[in-house]
Length: 517
Image 1 (cartoon, rainbow, N blue to C red):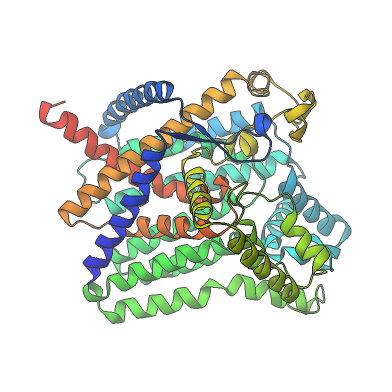
Image 2 (cartoon, rainbow, N blue to C red):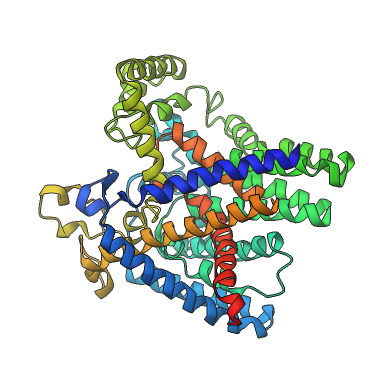
């Protein structure tokens, strides 16, 4: 029965991956804040350019793979620290060359952290305040407040900690790969090097927010859960539970990882026995919400708030309402949903939930089945094939002072100071658009290798990658319903890299292995 479920999961993901690849030959998902503003774009594919770039990226990937094979003779104690140090150096260079200032929610949470630290001002929890509406953001506010208290109040300090979390994720990608591909006789440093130089993760160290932190915790939790299957050590289970709880505290999407961990453990019931599986399941579930409960208890105990912070927070229906939008297919709805909660419902959770349900029902009643199907298709394709996690906005940034009206008026980003690199990527330059193209094509090639691995796994009845599939399918299902940004699926990138490298290695070995190269 378990094998049947796993096979079904492989088939479902293969269908979605195949859809992403096939659609990319007709449509190109874009996000370019300077050119289009904060909106998703699905443009007609430039097929000739697309095919040329596929060939170029594929050839470059093969060359780099062969170069990484030459590292195999060196000890992991040498290669792993050296690679992480190299990645660290690149990220340090990036944050000095692209001195992006925080904007939007990033600026808000940083301002709140400063208000709490320097003025003991917690008024944001009051009605109409930011944390009254979004109490889940208190985790990143508390984190930033702690950094500001312990270290100098400087953007570089916060971005340096982003780099540390990014390096943890890179290491976990390699360890997770080795755990899932334990039969490999090579050190497979290629996956480590690829993760260490993956541009979206390098540039996202510039984003002062919760994405990089949560990704490190959640990827680590999944690694220790997979490791437990082999070791059956309760130390691994405890680390899984703690890391999962921490990751969920920073991003509530951790529930998808929780479900994955629980199903992964339950799938091993027959092999490990219920005595080895049930206690870890119970421990993981019990610890999952401890950070949130503790936060609530402390806030009420210190009379910062008089009732649970979730009593009148924005309901989940707000994001579900944003997710049903024919014009922007689930992207930001220009404060329409905010207005329902803030103005129509007067910051009342129960009343706004009722209004959001009515709004969703109204949207479904007015749209035809074809329009809804088209919206969900666009939503799915744009989110998963955009390929940069909106790196050009949140990582590279732009000098808003260069705006000259029109669409450029959307740009609100600023740099602390400009450099030759920020000038090179200024506006919608060739450097910026070229980089976005390369990352887009790389993303599609990653999907192609993943599809190869899925198909070979189905044929060979080999289902070791089931934990990765569960998380990816969880994100696909969730963001079909939720408000979308391609940045929201950033916590999945480590799993896509692991899956991609396994598939790429299969393709490379099949293509060149018989020739003895």
